[in-house]
Length: 463
Image (cartoon, rainbow, N blue to C red; front, top):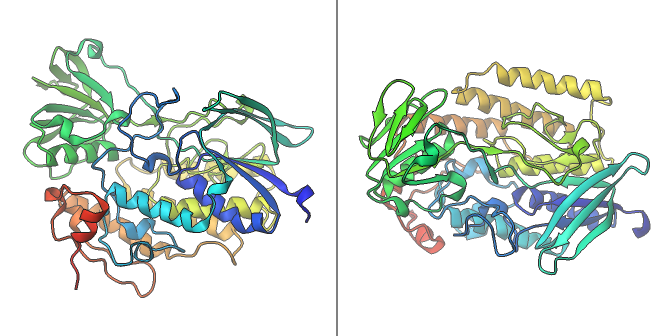
């Protein structure tokens, strides 16, 4: 295939999903099968793993993409998310503990893509403003703006578009009676930047999932006065320390007093943190291409295999699910997109109706699960990945032991039930031969406030 008839492929976003996709296509680009262009609104790669103290808008007036906070540590063991072709030990030159902090994870993600030499494909500080598809020419038109020069380019055409912008940027904001008159601070978790802001304060956290869980224990670790967690559907039910309690959903707010649906109340609240999730937002996509969905572990709306736009599979969306698997799931999704777009494999369902039927089957399976059935959702997403792997070219798809990964998730769920404050101190075996057990840190997580790369690496026990 000559350079003149290479497939032009646009990737929107240079976070973990977009970077996985660039790496998946790299060899095809070297063989002159494709021409890759990745558009990234931020000044650097890494997506939400980039920490910034900014909230609201950035230096270009664009919404701050990342809700990453300063003292975040992984809430799942690295053994479940580790890249097949680039291990943590390979990157850091030594075994590391199972739960690394934010800076370590970002360094690892960036280290892999630096080694892959894919930066040349990325146009930084370039915002995608519109994407449409011409049914006659079978090509996409992409309009972009250079945020440094304010120049808009509207004549870019591509054979395929891959949306990899994530779904943790636009907060979901609920309404509660009286919240507009609350005299303290109200923020969404997207704008939360560090637990040290809340030392000695009485906090109300609204939410019942991972953000609420993690921000609660982070604020406890750094000395919040009291923490009340208000849940919508069911309590998380962990063995909370004395200063953390769970209550039903907020009913109304009167001054600094919060009233709940069970008739109880709490006084003297200083700050409300809304850990209420995010909205999928792809407003730059033409209406006929725009993905709209609530957050699910399997996407029930218009994405075949959770990836391909049902009506036009030349368009792909990556990482739109809520995730138990993360980095390696992105790699597998990217591998399938590559194989389909290059014609190496054919998707099993060749009509829209068959694709919708496949979606409905998995949608029904998810809807049958209870919201607190963590093991059930783990089984669902494991089977989803197994299906993707079976659809890929078997000679090039990333290979790892899904059953060992799922067993690791089961252990995480049990560790949290045993102690929400100590689960990050546990050690996991690698899912790759020779299945080495991870070392542990000399300082337990609750007392470890040095989350720098150097501090973390020096804290790891050596044999």
